[in-house]
Length: 317
Figure 1: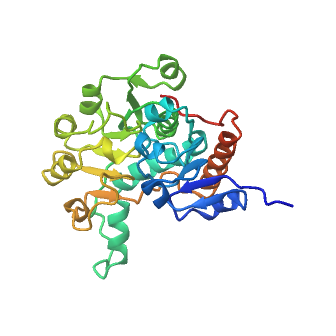
Figure 2 (figure 1 turned 180 degrees about the vertical axis):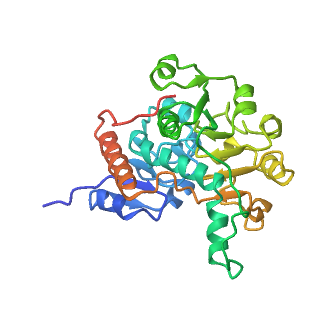
């Protein structure tokens, strides 16, 4: 009996065990070098696990490409117009990671407000020899004002969590969302007003041409000197050098970052040396349950695309 030909899939890896289990022996996995160098033989699919750049030139190097499936919601590394022009659907996994990412946003906010990382280091150090009620004051989250930039699914979920902390919630979005305002009790604000009135500014927007370096030196100067910037979006939404200088100069009080640009930062970058920064290595969706869901959805998107069927989630231009 002749061997059934398996779809040839180019992926950047190494891939998580959940993804590998999803693929099983149903595909022939090829190294990312094939995408970089090109192939004379047909390539059926591209699977992006990290954030490798995928543009029209890469697509053209892979003859027969039928589907691009992304592990995660952010697709700023994929040129969607190029894919649309070539009739190649792009799948992502937006819904499954909403709750986990919103949780991370609140965790980062609270960690910075209450100086959790600094406190942990101090509690483990030889310097901690007695309790001092006059040491290491933080700032309160409850009854403060949170400004959310990007009130999509993740931003709305963050808002619900913040309201449970008795926070006042402002938001800025490219389109005003009056129905969500009424449902949640949040207030729309202009970009400048949100920056100037918020105790915490949380970035929940996608990285696009319009949001690239949205938080630059001018934006940071509009924030309160007591304010904290929280980024659970993409590193490129923030001008890293401007943020570093603002933290050194105390233009703002603190930052709490799940993402940076570049990612990771060079190990000698001055941002890494600052005590008023909380940094985690892009863990927004890093829960067992969410990452399993991302694996399941991204693998299913890939096989649906190979079968010429509608994807669970298709990114539109």
